[in-house]
Length: 615
Image 1 (cartoon, rainbow, N blue to C red):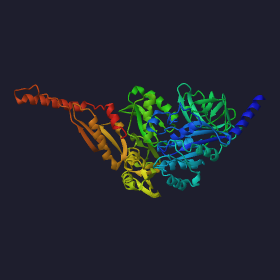
Image 2 (image 1 turned 90 degrees about the vertical axis):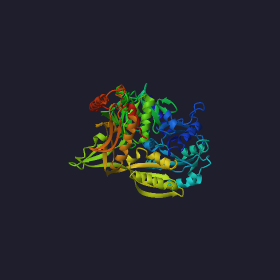
Image 3 (image 1 turned 180 degrees about the vertical axis):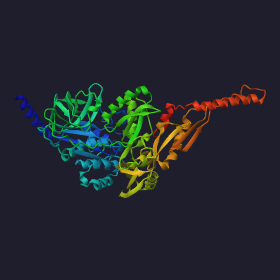
Image 4 (image 1 turned 135 degrees about the horizontal axis):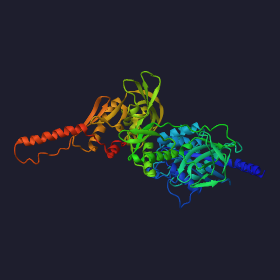
């Protein structure tokens, strides 16, 4: 009886506490200062002491600090004492700003009721701001617009206010002015969070229903899952069930997320926390799954965020084939931190055993490669990245075959057509760069769909582009021709027919499968010549001539030749008849002919790394 009374008392306390919870995320374009603003919020609520404070406090990867970007979303709980005497609990989930990490943003938004929309006062609204904003509006989040960096000399406060009102409406006085650097306006942000973001709705007495929005791996504790409780109550020691996998475990530890995990005995509806169940296998927890109680399960799983399909594919191979199993373990642990990474085993004649991995974009690929090296000491070779195509056969023209690998493309004799993914891209720039940006997009096979002047100094260009054309160097070129002012965002709009060919690189007639790529027919010759020239510089000379060829089917479209090393066999003939010299030269010629027939060209690891670099 005492246990029932205690439980009812706890549930009653949670019902009161829920009115004092505020769950929100921060959304912004890359480099608009959201991590700095999050630092000021942590300082203001004294969540982190002055001694422990460092810039980008929530970015705990060295890679994030070096590049000045957020790669993973981070959750943290803050306690705020309001001027009306009430204490509030804020659950903040920081989000990345780069287009490649929009998956992380969708996860954060699914766990919140409100969002701070940060806009840089010196740059105004940019493409990713709009993209993330629409994502938040779809989930019915309360939006609080904040203009950051108002202390800068080049701040355009009134102009940026106009842009925000054009975008989301509302009154000018609702826009909060702040500076993440000086701390100005932080109290106004706190006040807006309390008064404008609604308290979470949920029933502490209902069956437990919690959404997993992230997870990490700890070598000693196993998998740590982060969740948001929508309904019900979770206690330490409860037997919980993961709805999608059907697996049941005991909650060894539950708690809230401060700078370090803080264990708790009970967590109620509306709260954000973590759970440790002793799971060692990363496959047993899926991000987006629902946690409920085994004895009193909820009726249905939570409809969480959408799964984002990877769009760029590349092979990742260990430099030493003995490291294959270590690479598998490393990718498994990375997948826990980054659920948008997908991989499957692959074999290459040139590179041995490895994995075919799917990424959200080129920055995502670079980050994964860097994390493999830093966190797991795995030095890897990455093959030429390509996107996912659809191939249709003549005998069955309605059924698509998904082609993620150049080797999977059917032979031209049985192939009916190939379709490639297209994107709708939004580019926001200054008017003086419109001409050069249009030239770049048209060169990348783009079609202009719309051109709108957002203000006198900002133009939005909408282009339809093939995804394959933007995965290599498009973003870098866009930034360089616009001097860093242009912002870029895109969404997949479907597949369209295309004339694609499989280009192979041959060394003395032997195909090196790691260099194969699917490419548009018009670009094949130019790309093939670049690889041939690069290989000519990188491959060591042999005793025989080496032919480097780029071929499409049986047709050679580019060729370079590495001349043979020649030993001076006549050096010892310092006199006598010319026939002595001719005899030695004929013997050398016959030897080179035999060597060319039986000799094989070994491609050194350095050549693979250099040719397959993403530049």
